[in-house]
Amino acid sequence: MHARSYNFGAGPAALPGPVLDRIAEDLAGARDDGPSMLEASHRSDAFGAVAERAEAGLRDVMGIPDHYRVLFLQGGATLQFSAVPLNLTSEGSIVDHVVTGVWSRRAADEAARFCRVNIAADGSAGGYAAIPDPDSWALTPDAAYVAYTPNETINGVEFSFIPDTGLVPLVADMSSSVLSRPIDVSRFGLIYAGAQKNLGIAGLTIVIVRDDLIGSPRPGTPTILDYGSMAAAGSMLNTPPTFAWYVAALVIDWVRAEGGVAAMAERNEAQKDRLYTAIDASEMYENRVDPSCRSWMNVPFQVAGEAAEAFLDEATGAGLLGLRGHRSLGGMRASLYNAMPDEGVDALVDFMAGFEQRRRAGAGEAAAR
Ligand SMILES: Cc1ncc(COP(=O)(O)O)c(C=O)c1O
Image: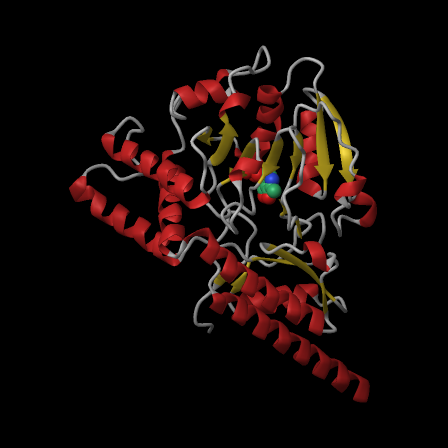
């Protein structure tokens, strides 16, 4: 029996222990104190306070300037692939997309339904193992925006810099990197992120958008996809995902209590260093991403010698869960979101070393027979 389990899943993903405890306490206490957050009306004072706390907390922890709106929406990051062009383009607009992996590719494909898309750079020829040099990007001077994905959750490729797009608004899908390290929000026109990795649970999508970019959606844009209408209604034009919003408020409180995004970054950097160092030092595991752009949050790796299924079986037995790589890539993927404790990474690294040793010993015995 293992002492406890660790969830390395890419999303939905691990929640911080204190957040889970708090949810359990709140639910248990609710019968006496009024409706729980699973039941409360989004128009109630209790939920209103939660919603306000979530926004104020996020503004504080990310340093979001006053001239940005923060929206709490539904539909996942995937719906933003459409909502962004519907809100930020007009007839005949061209938009630039930097393609560095599966998610930025999908965003570009979806945008092409609404406007002309210029693929300014494409890392697919190199198997998405590196970020094309910004000097080689074919940017359009009068593009409506430049879109990119700072962290590619599937390919494990992450930008260590914010691209300079001059006056052209920069749009970032931060689904798997939001709150993982400090960023200068004022460099972006729009940031969106599904909540189910670093912000809580599935069902909620955060959009942070500069004021001047909202208010002129494409004709025919559904009202709930119009950022201006949603901002005017406090993200409550219709029934919002109340429970996911409440969990996000708790996660944001937790990040602040832990020392904010800078403290998250320090822990995340140390954790990913520990795992990549172990992978690089071994003969059994391999991460194929260029070291200059290896993800802090999602670490894909291959296991040599057709040992992947045995690795997964034994890891699961050891309480190391959610390590199966994305179906499009195979292999393994360890996601090290903010909620991953250091002990989880220690347990994974120890397990990997032990597994390699056992396989080697087994191969040695077979050769001697
Ligand atoms: C970077 C990125 N973008 C978009 C998505 C799609 O998000 P959703 O499932 O919330 O639509 C994901 C999901 O993992 C992701 O990692």
